[in-house]
Image (cartoon, rainbow, N blue to C red; front, side, top):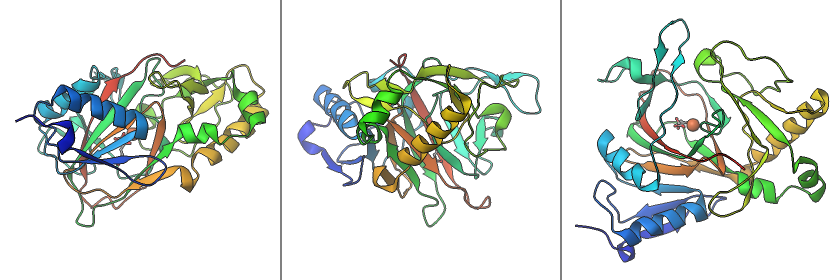
Length: 294
Ligand SMILES: O=C(O)CCC(=O)C(=O)O
Ligand SMILES: [Fe+2]
């Protein structure tokens, strides 16, 4: 069967972003009007929450492909190794061994500070789709998304003018720094360390679908403003990071197994606190190739 647009219910979370989608099994082929309705809802809410899904890797890729090409993350050399590692299209995020090769598992029970997936690539992802496969009994830690469109809107006019033309250097904190998950730093023009990746993007980017302005900033990795006084840049970025992580800009998701979340990496940052390393939590992620920020 295919689903019609009228069978689907899309209910906003009532928070700064996000909507819950029910009445849909995304493992099946979707009717054209349903795909269009989902795309519109994603543009409107920046985060869609699909309940009660159970997708194989192939089905997760097939559903994600309605929204664009699947992003292939570039190969990198992992800490303590010499061979470059090419991440799979479906990333397993787990803090425990899975049946699959643990080589393809990103071990993570440490905090993931508010970050934007792939902001360190010249052409970042447009979105990510994350499915909860196995969770601790209590659902485990919540994941929180921040609305970076609203964050931009709520800046005062002087700050909007001050940052209008600034370019930000984003340094990747994965790979080499896997274990460190350091507090967010100001890079102050530092040179890259081996294994690090970097991309320069406008600090204020424009949503490619809606034209809305976005404060395209994480509160996780090293960044700095290009051609800008280091002390002033550090102060400005610290202030903006406080701004984007305010509770009223957030939606916190309490996970259930079978949840599939599809968020906009162009317009949101997300955060997951540390949790007990002996609590089994396994999720799978696919990301969509985006376009050059402008
Ligand atoms: O573990 C989580 O809830 C979030 C992981 C994450 O940052 C991601 O999948 O992009
Ligand atoms: Fe992420």
